[in-house]
Each structure stands twice: as C-alpha cells, then as structure tokens.
Image 1 (cartoon, one colour):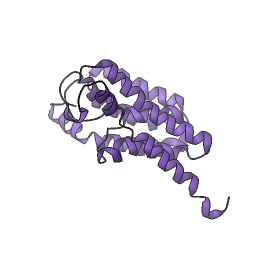
Image 2 (cartoon, rainbow, N blue to C red):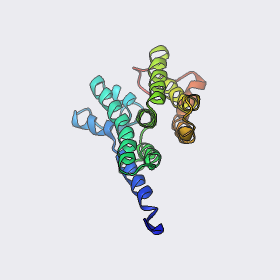
Image 3 (cartoon, one colour):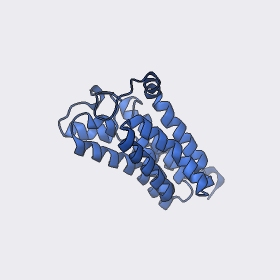
Image 4 (cartoon, one colour):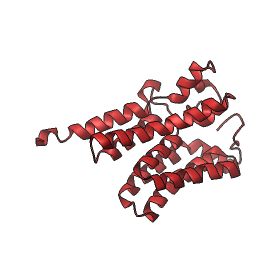
Length: 201
C-alpha cells in the first residue's frame, strides 16, 4: 500500500468505532417502549442503571447487553477486516459512547461498553471485569462503586495475565470511566451516593 494511504485503515477504524459506540441504545429503547426521555429521568444518564429507574428491568438488561455488544463488535469487526486496528476502534467506540455526536456529546459513563471492549481484546480480562462489576454490585448495591472498580481491575488483570500490549488502552479507558463518575465520587465522599433502586446515580 502506498505510504500516503497508510492512514486510511486507522481512520476508517476510528470513524466506524465512533459511530457504532455513539448509538444511544438506552435512549432508543426507552423511547420505543414509551418510557419517555431517559435524559429527564433519575440522573439523566443514558446507561442501564438509569434505565432501571424507569421500572423496566428488561429494558435495563437489554441496554446493558447492547452497550457491551457495541464495544465488542467495534473491536471484533475492525480486527477481522483490518488486523491491528482493533484497539483504535475500541478507543473510538468508547469515546463515542461517552460523547455521542447525536446527543450533543452528552453520553453515558462507559462501564458496559468497556466490558464489551475488554471481552473482545481478551476474554479472560473481560471475565475478571464482569466478575468484579457484578460481584460488587451484588454486595454493596452501589452502581458507581462496582463500575469504577471493574474498570480499574481491567488493566490490572491484563498485566497479571501477561497481556501488556492492551494495558495502556485499558488504563486510558479506566481513567475516563473515573472522570465520568466524578459526581458520583463526590457523593461517595459525602455519604450521599444512592444504592441501586433509588432515584439518582
């Protein structure tokens, strides 16, 4: 391939990943189900935790699965078509979920999408992520604590498992998850962070 076209594959992976990641499944599903505008409910977030506040557990589960699936698909599809560019698609899909162009760059917090990315990059790392996330959620019942802990656990698990090539990406994603949870961290420090099933989070 001529040198001037070497940028084409990464650029295509970037665009594809971003557009796929920016699909706001939580918002789409709640509107289709007649549950209203998700952004005016609870925390206003478009993720599965806020969908749960509509009282529709099935919609919340579907949102979680689809948000994870788009992260997984971005990596898997791009890696199959353009080997070596899966990480580019992963980062773009994650940014797309956090800052979707369709919603004026106000998106979700990335926990479910990072799960899909982790599974696509290394299923053992993804498994650790899922176990930490769901395990802590079952014990402490605080969505932000379980989500942030899972995000931080991912690069640690990758390093322990010898997948050092994906550690920098996972660290970057974990830092963005923590950044998006800054308000939650403030409420945790003040003792006002709600548990799953209450009105905000």
